[in-house]
Structure formats: C-alpha cells, structure tokens
Image (cartoon, rainbow, N blue to C red; front, side, top):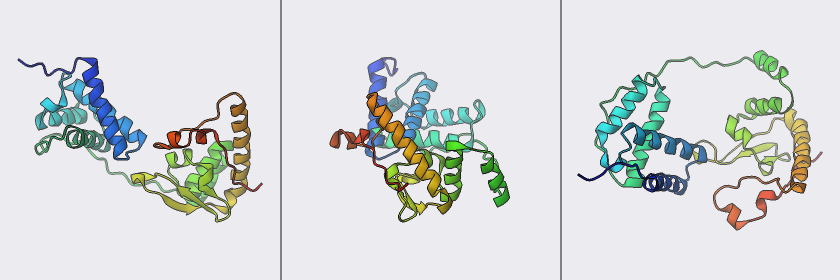
Length: 232
C-alpha cells in the first residue's frame, strides 16, 4: 500500500513553500499568505497528515464542518479556510475539486453597524493622546483602515495637495484620500520625531524598513533611506 502520509518534514515544507511562492506570484498580501498557509497546515493535520493531493471534496467538507461545529468559527473565518483550500488545489496542485456543498455552514450573525455621532467621535478622540490619537484621527478623518494607517509611508503623505496615497489597500488596489487640514501640524511634528528616531537607529546600525516585492534587491540601500516631505 502506498504511503500517503505527509510525515516527512521535507515533503510538507515543499508543499507549503510552493503555496507561499504561488501566493507571492499572484500578488497576495503577506498577511493573507500567512493565513492561507496556516489553514492548509491545519487542513493537513486534521486529515491525519495525508497529502492534500490524495484528498478530495469529502475531506474538505469534513474539515469545514468541524470548523463550524467543534470550533464554532465565524462565517468569514470558515470562508477564508475554504478560499485557502480552493487556492491550494487550483493554483498549486492543479487539481479540480468536486462540488463542495455538503458541509455545515457557520452561522453569520446579523449585526447592525455601530455609527458614532460627531459628538461621540470627539469625546473618543479627546480621551486619547500621542500616536494613538493621531492614528485614530487619521482612521476617522481620512477613511483609512487600521493596517493602511499602520503601514503608511512618508512619501505617500502629500502636504501640498492635502492628500494621502494608500498603496496596496484592500484588493491590492491603490487609492487617494484626503489629508484632514486639522491633522497637518500634528502629522508634521510626528514626522520630525520619526526622522530623529530614524537617525538615532542608523547610528546603532539599524533603522531599516521592509520593502515590497523585489525592491530590496533593486535598491539595496533604499530600506535605510529617510525622506521627510513635511514643511515644519
């Protein structure tokens, strides 16, 4: 009887490495790639470490049902797990699965969105200070998502045009949003402090940032360069 187990470390690593490489080629974000690799690892373990190429729709349905019943995950979490598995089979293994329909779907709760009034937003922001207040103000005033704000680069803030360029946002799309007038001075002061910290880090041999895709090879020194476009 052939051995279909994924017990050997090299075989398992090769599959997950191929998955991560394919995700990079398809321009999926690093966070999505980490999530997909995590789901495939869980899928393999759930099925007794058998190689996914020897599994079919029944194994997938059983895994998804377990997520909904035993682990009580949300509908969005279950959908992400399914998306990761479908990506593995279609893009990495080149195998089409049968129709996946017979599994227990996680319940999607019906929630009304919470929309704060202007007064509530004002009171919320007044309770913050420092960088958290600046970030929260950008989320509200510029319509940024949390990770978009956390990964915002100096070069994408245009004080002259009063706008912010969001790179690689949701769906890997770029977009332009407004830079609120009331945040300009605070943001300029923040960038001055960031530059001071960056220069101090450089003296200690640090002060580098992660560059997207192949830019680190094309521009070896770019990760340590600092440009301040503010006009204090």
